Length: 487
Ligand SMILES: Cc1cc2nc3c(=O)[nH]c(=O)nc-3n(C[C@H](O)[C@H](O)[C@H](O)COP(=O)(O)OP(=O)(O)OC[C@H]3O[C@@H](n4cnc5c(N)ncnc54)[C@H](O)[C@@H]3O)c2cc1C
Image 1 (cartoon, protein in one colour):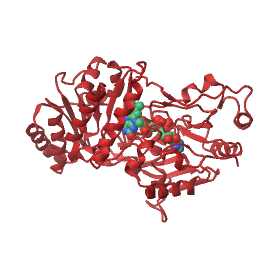
Image 2 (cartoon, rainbow, N blue to C red; image 1 turned 45 degrees about the vertical axis):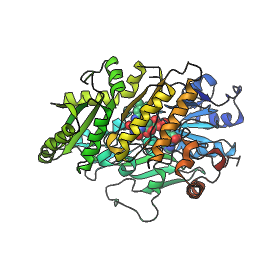
Image 3 (cartoon, rainbow, N blue to C red; image 1 turned 135 degrees about the horizontal axis):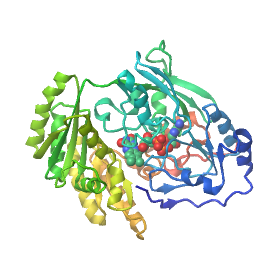
């Protein structure tokens, strides 16, 4: 499904001949690695959000070793640098809102080291998430964070956004699965944080947790050039249950009931009727067409433990009003269910051409109330909103579906999104569970952060990037962040 591009910044006049900045990049990296003609820049103006920005040039990195040179050239010309992975981000993080250089990691796709004994792998940042699991599967291992975009998004992008996924309920998000990083700071210095690689490296290092600070920093602290990942052994037994409900309220009650019973499934996902309809139209089979909502509950662990939990979970589902419960009988049926869940956003294109996805987080106990409010917002603006989300985490993804060609529609969509996020914050939640603040939620940051909170965070930003060169215009309201100047 293609996203609409609406909130464009002014497009700069095409540079011809190349500007002195571009000329220096061409001299350092050659024609094949530097894109600068307007028609070649198009694909780098967008990500999965509704915004657009125009880079002056794109550098297709050939190795992490290119990054310090690129940073120095950018600094000399006073240009900002925006790291970019696969461009699937949903908060505008990779959009070059202030022009400058888009630093693209997609060619850095090597799995450098697999250390099955220590459950570690070291990869380049452009490696696609799912390719990590493919690379280590023969050792009976996998990489747990599994964004629904995992067939496309990069590990560098996952690190920058602290990405989550369906199976993060039990195992935690990206930060819990990264043990070390190789990074380049804005001044060109390369540093290693945490435990990067090597079988004889200990599990931790003394000093501040710089790995923890960089994970989730949305490309504003450093460019990540290497990532050490924690791997997990594939569970002995996995059971996937699909439960149908006649109301979203019942499905919400079941979600709270399961967690309140002290059961933490590997995944606990909800899809509503609109999503189910879209999936059916997109050709996905196996979801109950009349359900108002379904829950996908995955239990995994030791065989005996899983078998013991199943009747318990089924009991809670039935007590909460489940109208049908099915358990996948084999790997193929399980894969089919996950294919539907992971293809849900794309399928929404069957309803309307564009979507605007929210990423609010709420206390699980307020699920029912907030989903009701989402329905009210949908009515208020006359916009369909599909709910497909990580219910167990309280990480909502109300997806506002619209047609960007209709005049005034985008403004309505943005207002509807803000109303939903406002409700999430009011009930004690927050603005982002896994997609980052980026550009899109930046105006709402003061809802969840005091001036003192922001000042402390910006102090950290200055320590990493004193001149504000890295991914400017993201996370914090414009007025709070310095503009880069020529070195
Ligand atoms: C259909 C769909 C489903 C999705 N499902 C999920 C989901 O379940 N869970 C989830 O968490 N997200 C999800 N996402 C959002 C997105 O896929 C993630 O945020 C992902 O981590 C972005 O990775 P990317 O490689 O596309 O990064 P990009 O979009 O290219 O960049 C994202 C951010 O990372 C920074 N960055 C990228 N590479 C580097 C690097 N090497 N060094 C420093 N900074 C870097 C960029 O500057 C930017 O700020 C989904 C997106 C889509 C389109």
